[in-house]
Length: 185
Image (cartoon, rainbow, N blue to C red; front, side, top):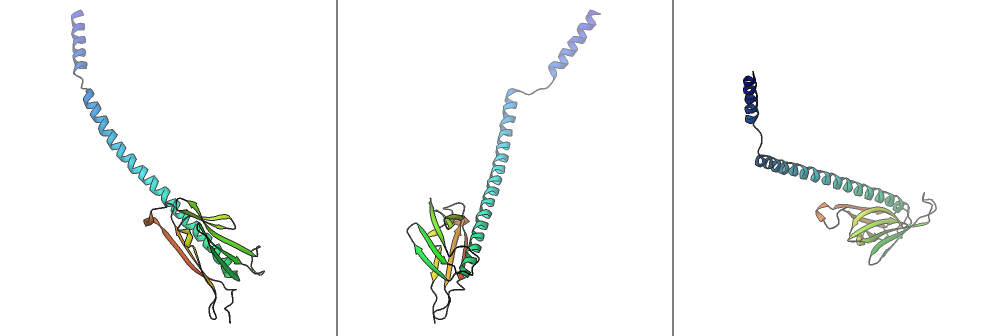
C-alpha cells in the first residue's frame, strides 16, 4: 500500500514538473512588446485629444470674433461719425452715436490692444470682446465720406488661438458703411 501511494505521488510530481510555464526571458519580451503597442496607442489618443481641444479653441475664437464684428457693425451703421486713431501698440476708432441709436452712450471706442507675444484683443470701451487676434495694429481703416459716398470703416481681424502659426489663421474682414454719416454736398 505504501508502495502504491509512493508511486501515485511520484506520478503526480512528474506531472506537475512537466507543466509548461514561461521563462523570465519570455515574460520580459512579451512585456516589452506590450509596452511598445500601448505606448503607440496612447500617443494616438493624446494626439486626437489635443486636436479636438485646438479645434474647440479655434471655433470659440472665430465665434467670439464674429459676435464682436456683428456688434461693431450695428454700432457703425448707426454712427454719425468715426474718428480713427492709431498708436504704436493699439489701433482704435471712436464712433459718435446720435440720440436715435439704441446704445446708451453718445460715443463708443473700439480698440485693438496688444497683450504681448504677438497676441491682440479687441475691446469695446475697455471690455474685451474678442481674443486671439493677430496683427491688431491694422484692424481699422476708415474712409471719410465724400461728395457722393458715405463714410466706411473696414474691419480686418486675423484670428488664431496659436499665435505664430500662420497656416491656422482665420481671416475676418468687413467693410461697414456709416449710414448716418451723410455725404458732403
